[in-house]
Amino acid sequence: MPAKDIYHNVVKNALQKQGWRITAEPFVLQFRDIDLYIDLGAEKIIVADKDTDKIAVEVKSFIGKSNIYDLHLAVGQFIHYRMALATEDPQRTLYLAVPSEVYKDFFTRPFAQASIQTNQLKLIVYEITQEEIILWLS
Image (cartoon, rainbow, N blue to C red; front, side, top):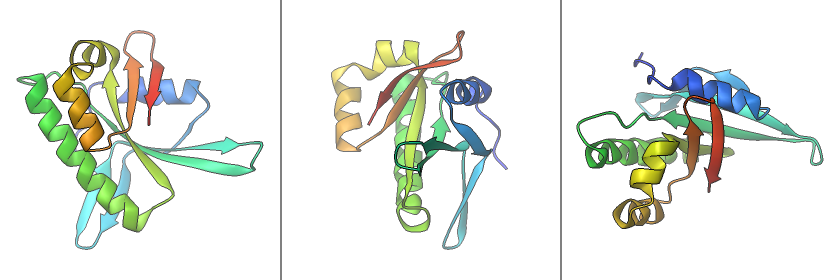
């Protein structure tokens, strides 16, 4: 079982503040002969539709050697998780959770924006100290 990201509980608490129910830590996804471990699985009841939104969230801190290196790792992970979810749990939407400071300083730059668009990344931007989600980008 992989280690939790240092901001795992921050994102978990932020999701719960917005009414999400955490259903798995980690969300284990079996795809053919591989087990994949996405940090969080969550659900939220949509009262008007009497339906449930389901998400999987991969939490990233971006505290490695460089933001570009961390982006390479995160995008690769995201693409593989999305591929597996499309087959094994297609009603669940995958998000990459990133800290607000990293989003502001790095993810708004042209290279990162091009990567987001090209790879169709869905982002949750979280504020660390307040344990709040400040932006959902689909």
